[in-house]
Amino acid sequence: MVTKFPIIMQKYFAFTLLFALSIYTMVSMVGCSKKGDTTPALATININTITKISATSATVTGVITSNGNSTITESGVCYATTVSPDITKSKVVKTVSGGTFTCLLTGLNPETTYYVRAYATNTTGTAYGNELPFLTASVKFWIPDAIFRSTLKLLIPAAFDSKDSLKTTSSSVKGFNGTIDVTSKGIVNLSGIEFFTSIKQLSCSYNSLTTLDVSKNTALTSLLCSNNLLTGLDVTKNTALSLLACYSNQLTTLDVSKNTALTFLDCDNNSLATLDLSKNNLLSSLFCYANLLTNLDISTLNTVPDNLYIITDYVSLANNGNTNLTTLKVNTALQQLSEIKNIKSTRTGCTISTWSNGVQVCGNYNPVTNTCP
Image (cartoon, rainbow, N blue to C red):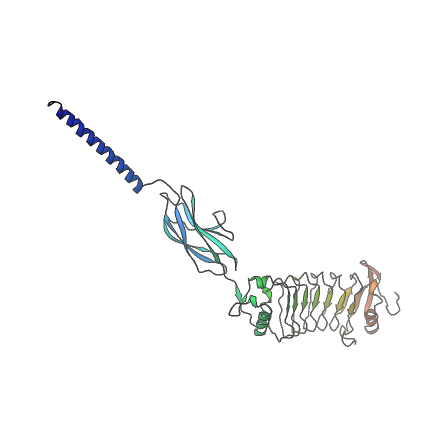
């Protein structure tokens, strides 16, 4: 017993020491694993702020709080007009290894809600942060004519902001498809009308307009701009026009060749030397007296006009203007109209030819005697 005790104690102490070392090693390994894990994972990223929001741009600030134990190969923000945007949609790349970064979003549409998320890509994949929405501002325009501005505001209050600027990109402006009537208001400038691209009818007669731009108002079917001071009028973009009244201005030219839907044209009391109506075969009312026309071709009209005033004044019924009219081409269906007879009687130097389906029937027709000498 005496000789065995030391051996037993030695074995006991050796076992205890080995057990203690094993426990220490296991605890150390577990502790190191929790504290310094280097296993790659997705990055952690978020959006902090969205600032400097304008009609077409915005500034987004994001932050990468963890690279996921892997090098960031790309980071930035992605955005769309629908929720949950990803990198397959629009994006702005601003690659950083970590920390804060800023991206400028440009080319945005005014008055539109966008959704934006920050993203970061490493070897594990692409991580997305929180999603935030923002609304772009409207594009505004100050209508210079105070009367036009106040009249429009009464008609469409929602089209203006609190400072009376026109919100040009708002649905109240772009989507307005009714009638704008500013007749006899004393308006001198109609700037701002170009933003109302969906209006069907514009009445701006009896004002003091010297210019009128309706090139953007392509939905117009009716334009009344008579009794102004217009020296020019471009309606070539207004192909839907069926009614055009531009009488009593100072027009020297008028191109209606693109206005093939016209059924009513009143351009009297101007200074027109020519008037090409070869494309306007739907005309049922034509008023072109009190001009400087030397020739006129109405042989392509499909039907007999309800109103035809070439030299006869509609108001006074007296002969008015076009005193140098020398050539008149008419459809055979029109050859006996009273206006054609009046032209032959009072414009003795005018040669009248009659046509049918593009073929001349008589080169020198006399509607008074109904003969073709």
